[in-house]
Length: 430
Image 1: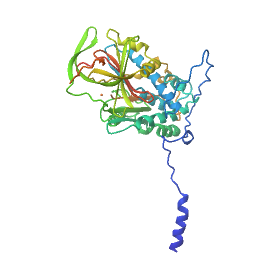
Image 2: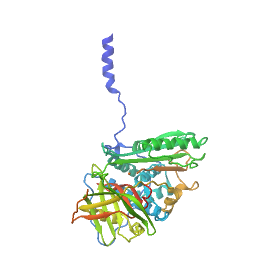
Image 3: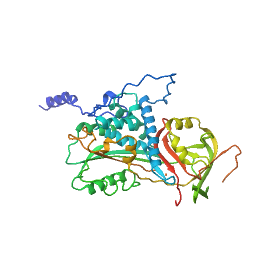
Image 4: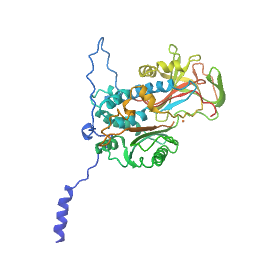
């Protein structure tokens, strides 16, 4: 009797299979059931007037919609930067990760409807992607994240992690949870906000600290959560890279850094002379220098105003079109580079900045429309965490002396995705 049993098993076994979710990085749109609670459809664009412009060339091996999403993030990044600059003194450092903030609010968008959804689409410029419906944004976000965060090596790390923290007394929409986990890798962890918001705050901060190798502590300050908190969305981004052209530790010297007309301090200035992508734009009164990290795909761009030109003048007029024009005109040049050692840290509330940009309903308990998050609707809170790090005379060299406030961008260079943006205005006492 054993032989027939064995034969029967061999016949039946192939009929059983385990459902394996598709690899998000190789999946096609049809493979991903992206059906959020509400969908925003972009209105049909008006017919252009005047001469037609040639379509912008899409970088090689790049999905056109991923390219558009990267540009949308760039426009949002510079708009948010201007809001931060307006509300800080010229001597204050600024540092943020626009891609981290956009990701956190894209997760929020999954559960948004009505005017709340429309405002998210507009403020984060998701509505500039040619696919007309909002659900497609998540698919292209997944593809962008795959392009960014699979760039790992022995000398360069770029890591992002997402998580949902929801009050355990609420039943969260299953579709919302499934899409959050599939697209953003954001699993839901139930916490007891209602009875012990302080313990929940510590749990979230510890998770962020762990994901950033303990470089980010106390993201959510004391009192930021209370018993009415229902959901916290967290995106962390961590970057650690080595310069392709390292600075020699022996080529460090003391120099004056001019924070403002009346404030100068001594800093440790690093020096090297080699070929970098560089250009000077006399009409705009700026120099641009691009220093690659190992692997070349991630670079740091420094925008240095000419002496006598306040950084605020550059900040006020900087947009993505101008930035891309500058970057396109840079070329390999022998440059004498002098930049201070600096460490920039920043913390700020996004609420008032995003409200000024038009995202108002999300922060109103009366107006927020988030029925796709749970069965009754709720008010969401989002947290985004970031972390940032012998001479010969060449008569044909350019001199780049960063002894005054400058802008910095850390970007993925092939599609110009802005990972971090900031301002080094005061590197003193470092």
